[in-house]
Image (cartoon, rainbow, N blue to C red; front, side):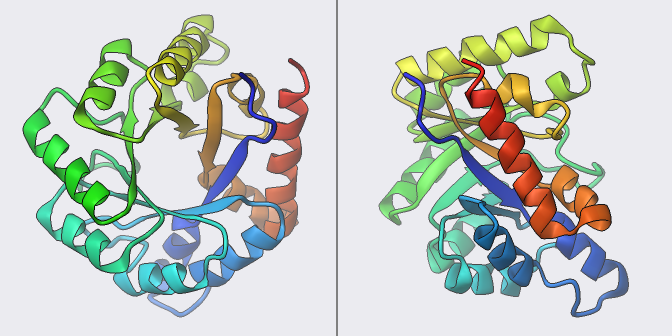
Length: 244
């Protein structure tokens, strides 16, 4: 069944990237998050990387206190990060793969690698009262295993779709895995590489409840401002949902 409202979570990592380029105080990702909420964002996403290349620990503490919608903390499955999440208690944690050599997240989490460790991590989040999501490639086996391991949601990696220049196989895989996830009782999210020019085909998918978008919104904000960039993306998503 189509949700009446598809949520837009704005990732503020790249606001912090600009700040860290000068190790300055501005631009402030927390102020950006508050502004995004006022312009139609349904939630805020922030990735606390192990190397702290953009978002810092204090940013997350401040986001927990200041975000009035929902805070989605992206992080790797490590003891340090699990302990941090248990302390700060964001609304949701999305477990993502992480490599210090990568510029940005390059693919979905390999849920077949050390599944016992992943299941225990998800159980720890549940015991802490934190909703969990796994960032995975649009693969049916990965969707099924995510459900078996105890995740509340999956976020389907849309990077291959975004880079495919209209390849029908990529959007078909997203549609198939979205249907499967919903059938299994998982909440279905999606994100990575989405822009106002390619978001429509993903936003049209009935089972996808939430899109996580950051880089394109922050990039667009350089030219039109953050408020306008958020509103443009919100409008593009809304228009796509009405196509069905």
